[in-house]
Image (cartoon, rainbow over the protein chains, first blue to last red):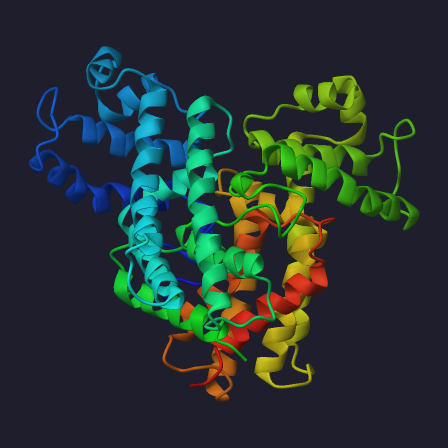
Length: 239
Length: 239
């Protein structure tokens, strides 16, 4: 149980795994400021006064949702946190739910694209190689969108927006499970563990990264993806 | 990303991973009713009217904390949920924090005992074998105390009780990390992944079980522990 001490990530202490409070907030806002800029540069409409575009509001909302919980975070608090009036926030977004939906879509879009590329009928390579590439890509997406993925993994289905996200996640999970099944069927994964259980353990290991990994430390996303895939795929090799 | 479809655990759908709401509540209360009985039998004082001893209140409180969040759950709601008056609850417990402390201690006591046995100076066997046994035992503890461990893994350090739990967890993590380091040093684990990262991945995989495993399904705790240890330790074998 538990994860570990400071040395690996550098950015946060082991004790705050299971916790996103201060650490995620800090890591998230610094890590995501680049993404915010590039989204604006890529031509997405930018409204409101400089420095407070929709992306900035969304980044901060995601951090607050992770720190305090979605239900416990109000638009008033978000406005106060950003030093804006409530009406200024509503200039950027129609509702708190819209922010949640945007955050969950951000997490789901990358993951959907990764698995869809792997299970496309024109995809090349063995099921094993495509699965391994999907796991590595999932790690990269998780790191690049850490606050949004953290939020996604905590969604409980308490509203239509959350239920829609869970439905999308279920579709992703089913495609992943089918890919694992194909890899077992081609003899590239051990057959003494049920494919469904392999799938659970595999993506459980990936998902658990949100509890402790913070970008910007000594461990690069590529090294993280390489170590994780090495451990799980060596461990799942046919016996 | 994501975990999997229904087949593995039977008790809950894959889509509710990351969610403990309904599923955990149900699984928790049925799985823990045995524990409640044995606690009473083992001589712990049993107060209040029949059927509403401290254990019953604690089990229900843990489920509500997991479903709604600790901050969002009031003693009034707990009382209403149990069909008791608020003063009847206070006959059993002094405060909401006392319930949280009891839940976190329940999760931490088993985990502490497991790692302490493994790192005791009189412990027998290689570091590798003791680590493997500790991982398997951690899976068993997680399953036997699923609601309490789920709560522990979500603690953010928002109060003294939570900070004390995080401090205990940090001690456990440090002992686990030292045991991993010993196993690498004796040449029993691969040395191309840093020991700290091994420790993170290993216990991340264990901790991720709370997101999807529910007792009472087709997959027994022993089979789960065997599959998980097989995957991770085969994957961590020296290359």
